[in-house]
Image (cartoon, rainbow, N blue to C red; front, side, top):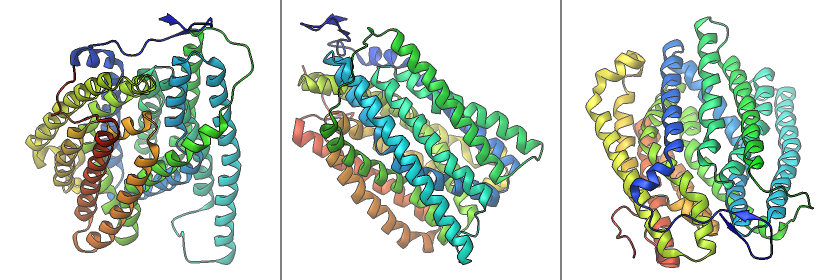
Length: 453
């Protein structure tokens, strides 16, 4: 710890000089353990839900949850990333009033956004029902109300996670969505399916309750983090103009990234079958385990990169980025190879014969993710260095490309066409982001770059 001249505020020093790759991994051990726990819980949830639900019903549940994620997007508006960066910088500068200000400002946005989005969704569905239009046939009033309730709960859970990461609590920031929510979803959802209590609407209700409890748990962790901070009872400081300027491109990035992530599912549901949606979802969840270490490294490095960029210590930034990329790439390629060796029989044993086509999709996705891991946490670096406008532009371009590829490939290749579109556009996004960092900051984030002295 060090004292900022002219203040009584203690702030954290940036990442120690010369930290080794092993030290970096050790500093993120808590994050990695939570990611491993989340991966296990996610995999167990897939297995349980797939065992009790036919692909058509599971695909419908995934579609409804995807709709809720889309509708929650305007409330999140890139707030978690903004909170992580601004709280990290404010603490590095010894300005607790600014920490209070950004937290209060984002809370107001969430409250107003909840009223606007909730009113819009309920009003729109009411018009559809009264007019008797032959659209949204899979929806009903209980389902719509659960989706509306999910919107602010999901957004608040993500907001709390951003606050915790800004306090340099990377492991704790992953607890709400990484452990609390999936544990409750698996236990209550699995028990309900086993007892035949509910199907789609019931599962979404369980997801709602799980996310709400996760948000509550996140706030308890925030209070604990605040207890270790020097007390500040003065007025909050607001830098609204700067926050608004940063929030817009972060929002565009979040919107484009969400579209790129979930457009495959929505388009498969519209152009193929709910069974195809289930196959894609299961394959992407399993293959997503390949990026487990990459996500953990990004979470650990994000606040440090923001602080180091504020002091223009670009050499240290590259050392951390390269070491993180090497760790992530090594873990990713090992996972992809193990998945390949597991074989089709392993999938049939775990998920049942109905989900056998998932094997080839998951293998292809996992090897595609190894290419992403080579370039490292490029998007995180752009956000932590104030280049969110570039990331939003790249996300928009690749989201549009993803939609175009889906329109072209899904009619001919079905779910494999959606998988190929995802892999290709993700790689393009990484290349564009890597190039921007190299041109603007002379920093290489890839695993094959040399460590700077």
